[in-house]
Image (cartoon, rainbow, N blue to C red; front, side, top):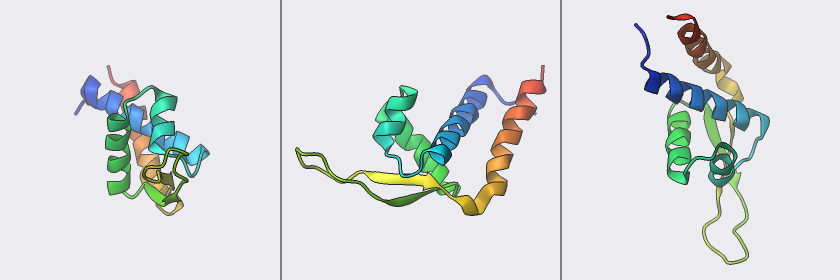
Length: 99
């Protein structure tokens, strides 16, 4: 069964963000959104998917800004589930070889 282009892009985006979180632990939603030129809503949506799959965990809370406000959640890669992480890479590799 082929993945649609939209699903492929979704898996690719999730994989890129997951790699980014793995390389940059304790990162905020805003930093992810800025790094990938995404809206905060889109970054939150992807992070929620990763949290639901237990690929990413909340590692704590950052400092609020000088203006005040809510403390941002910090995310990091969940090292316990490395096998699921490989499955995402595998899904991208399969798609790239299909015609």
